[in-house]
Length: 123
Length: 123
DNA sequence: GGCGTTGTCAACCTGTTGGTTGAGGAAGGT
DNA sequence: ACCTTCCTCAACCAACAGGTTGACAACGCC
Image (cartoon, rainbow over all chains, first blue to last red; front, side):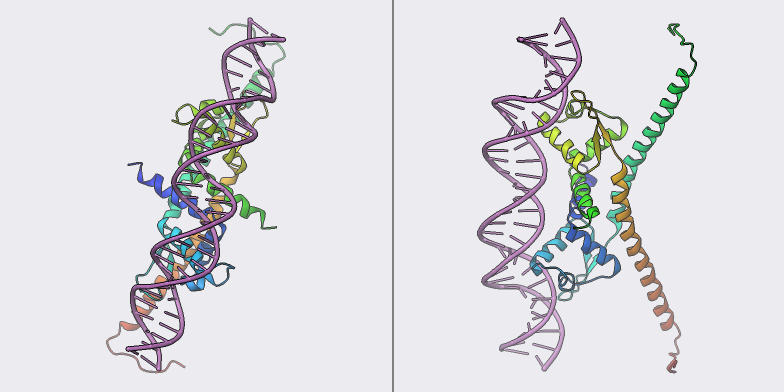
């Protein structure tokens, strides 16, 4: 058991790494659509688009009504949360650290300010 | 020209699709590190980690001081913004649409509410 | 200059991805 | 019952990704 969210993030990020799939997501954000409708604008076989949709589905980004024949694809935004939370966590950590580094550098600059250098050993 | 940010998003999402690379990012969020330090905890050759770092670098997620020999890897959070903006944009669109759909359904339910069906034409 | 440390480059292997074509399954219309 | 529409499945292919090992480049230290 490799931590379930790890696998979900793997799939989610991989799914969005493809520009065609990002475009599908962008369009599905506006309205549900069938595979046929989704395929129309691309210079690509229907089967290829079907595969892309399958990837999105396995990534949990998209669901399909069991409706059959006309089975519209629907965007499920939940996994997005997982991704943004991951990203934001480390972005904040990095920025926080950067902020602290900045403060440290500022303090060091202050310590250098006095022209008479302090040579005493602090121990 | 395929829109520069498309290519950047391709690389960024692809980079984070790998759990080892996400772990590298997580560690680099806390502190800069050399390739050797980064490689230590993994059951994987140094060369493999070096490749991962290169992928992160080409994705713009990480920079290296030209320092040479001891060339610490440093997390650059800027690309994160691009990703979260992309994700949040479509998540919001989807949620907005969902909200509107909900409202529509609520209205339809209201129209059915009265037991005495109103047959007058509203025109 | 020679040596250890640190990291990259190159070649190679294997599995996966993104596309193709061809065949076929499942529902609805007539 | 049959046709059409919509979609998936299967086989195949080229390209890429993630790992390996081996060679070697760049720098700091004696």
